[in-house]
Image (cartoon, rainbow, N blue to C red; front, side):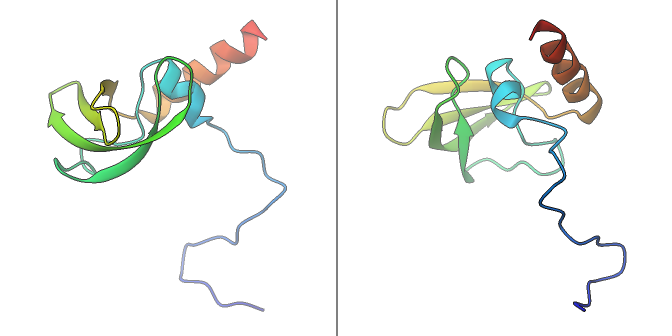
Amino acid sequence: MTLLPKGLKPWDPNKKPSVNLRTLAIRGMGTETKKTIKVGREMDYYDSMIGDKHMGKITKISSSGYEITDDKTGKKEKFTFYDKNKAQEVMSEQAKEC
């Protein structure tokens, strides 16, 4: 038996994730919240056009979202802040479309 810190549940490989970050990125929502974001931090992200994974640096933060500049191409991508409730709405809309 593995001891885990209080409040932390063991990872279940059979549990399906409730949010697909690639789908959210295509719809303009990023993975960062207002509390977790900092200018200059490098991160990987999904392209908002086709969902390809890229590496970039956070260059600008606004009241509604943030901007990432791609390391290789210099292309700028804008994302809104991650919101758990809105993410669930987007995922349920996508499930209806399929």
